[in-house]
Image 1 (cartoon, rainbow, N blue to C red):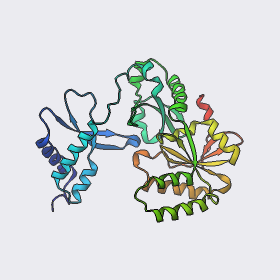
Image 2 (image 1 turned 135 degrees about the vertical axis):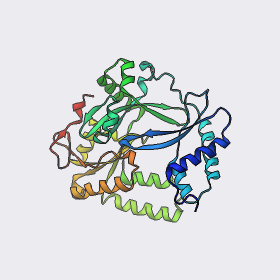
Image 3 (image 1 turned 45 degrees about the vertical axis):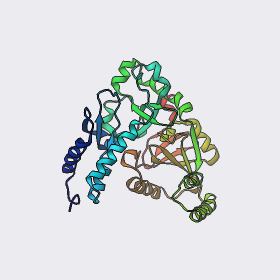
Image 4 (image 1 turned 45 degrees about the horizontal axis):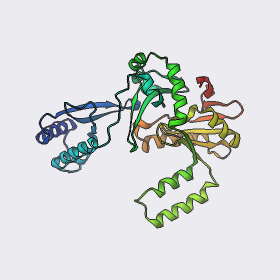
Length: 325
């Protein structure tokens, strides 16, 4: 039966053939691989035009899965063409000044990634070490319609800018306060926010869940630490003042790396066992977080008396201030 047992590479060739039949003259179709965080890679399609500097990428895997589930190749081709048109109608982000540091320095932000999972990529990037993480740098491009794109700062780009990694770090930490202000909410506040914005939940179900969340909030307070953009919020690991402020209210607390975008803070006084937290992180990472968004399988603890963060079951305790920001 068509598609149900087709090998992936054969699907790629069929897709290229069918796409070329409908592409306008002068369009060059290219299949490429995009490498993401944690050494995850995805195959993408680009439909290049000679007069364009930036070309939208379209991820292939979902279309392959749809084909294997019986969707017609003609319908898939039309979806890809429509998606390409839709992407090209988005406002164009201005990346022309990327090589001039003084034009982009106020757009540089921090991204926290797992060091051991990104060893190959880190050979090409300036970074700083903290715990088992690497602190890397991105340029954030935005427009007035909340369209965003980020570009990792490479060693080559840093050389062109003629600045040091330390100077870049200090600039990025300053920028984070203005570009991505920290946001701390209870887990229930976060869940309520998501629930209220979910059009797929009917009113009765929403009401029942909200009631349960209100009751549960006082019994087991957990907090989500991120930023107002909900992007790369795990960089809050480096926010010494915010961590200290939380400790002044709750004492020692655990830090769960929910993803590269957010952290979960759990006061030690109401936490479950450390092993259960470690097991929870593994379960969530393996089943609920996109592979390229996993930050760590470790659980961390903030010690209020020293201001240090440590990895559970490991000796190394480090204060965020060692990064000198």
